[in-house]
Image (spheres, rainbow, N blue to C red):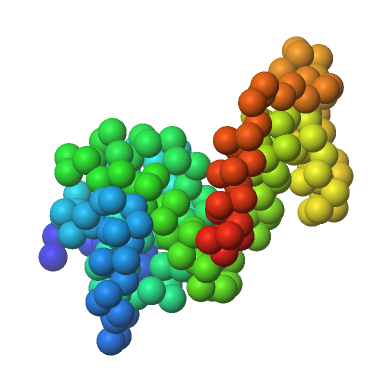
Length: 200
């Protein structure tokens, strides 16, 4: 081995090894049915990882989550922080040569994780999602200030990002009072149907 190859090997980042056991091969079908996306089409070109703005906060890259699902590693996928870190910006989907809708996949995985009572890797993210949904249920749209205040009360994290909040208030990015949609009947019916379906 020449000196250049030796140096490259020393500088290489450690690679996470996926130890596949007897996987749940029905899991990928379940994700496909719920997301409308065929995960088998992924050939792991890593374009999704290359463009993701949140990749450094993830424990697995987006294609890594797909690989785990392909191997039927249900528990590993549902306990992953990646499915909660993804913000659904569609950067990966735009870059994907197979047009895999990763945002839909992550939504499906989050739903399965909640329904399965899996250990949530990022419970604060789930709390924030729930506050957003409660705001939509109340007003038909998001009231950002109330969402932030309720989230702060729940997490008891009072001062983190306070400077950002004050700047948003100064720039009138946060309304003090919520605005409501006129017709909330369809909205209430949608939330009622969702609750009857047993989805948290």
